Image 1 (cartoon, rainbow over the protein chains, first blue to last red):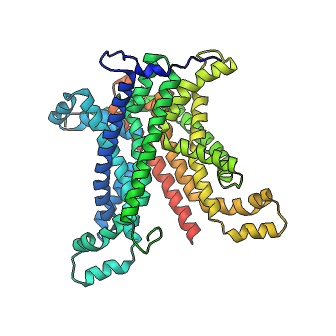
Image 2: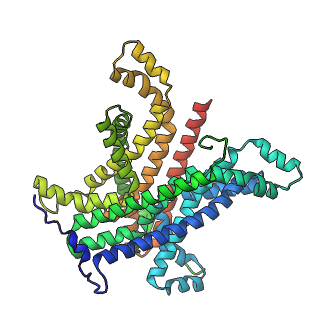
Image 3: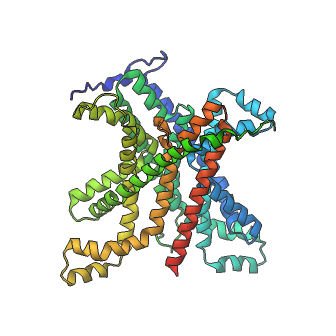
Length: 245
Length: 226
């Protein structure tokens, strides 16, 4: 088997004329990063909120939060993405649906992928936050209440400052998952990293180089995220706990 | 709220959807079976005292865990068949999508199973291994008769949870246009102009199956804790 390797193909001008194939690849990388990071912020905020609700004494609120988690955990990501992208605009009030469909196609894809990844990941963050809160000794909550703090104050000043620091290590793998899951957005046509890799196969007829490059980019993202989270972990770890000082 | 639901295309499509579900289950079960066997071997290599073996296993596991499943599947749909055509002289264009999907999923899932199994093996107290050696067992006997049976008992809930995730992930074979359950639902919806209904139906089916399975896992967990 003889395959002609042409790594210099990345430096050739791309079919669009205004960039090289490496430029396409980097444009895809930028979209992957923008999508994943914004979905991660959304997931953290929603997930922390839902995680708190999961642990409140009110049956109604904790039940609703549990249903939320089950809903987003038991439907495949791809199906969720297609529902956000194809189904929801039809079911929204006509004016909203039309407004969405008149948006630039890239914006439509990006918004659908962002909302989808954000909700999907938030259900997982929620479970981590819940187990972080539940791992606190019950005396902390009782002490807060005994001091005359209201329940929201107890969460705000006593439990969450501890719990959120404890959940940083398990959240690392969820953070890594956001980047990997963002590749699913290529199925609705968003030109992120994986989609650019596929496009390059068609345009350059150098499949191995394109795929190896995309794979290496994903591995690089992984390494960078792990290093960054390691530093965050060291900053926030709680003295006296396992892994603490 | 102007959408008129019309569910009438679903009853007639049920046999086709069931064929799709069979493909989904076929891929899932193969990947679980191969994944557990290859994953166990990888876990044992990872824990092995022979540096070459543990490096190989660590490299394999980290590689597969750091790239998206979708990328792995694209490798197996677009690149590996060409490679095989070149190496083994398969007829170009022969349809290898189903076998590619199975191999791709099995290799990918093995990396995840290997980490679960490694944790399971490490959860068995060291004294058990020492006791087995003291009784004169060889390494393979100690593993097979003492360590792995206990490790697998501890791992059942995690392995099942991973199987549920795998079942959901098989929908990604959509990228090869292979008609698994989701692919079939999409095709019917696309053909009849009823994508909204078919996608919601597919979502509901996945939800019911996965939620029931997760209740089963919870039951196992409770029974084991008792």
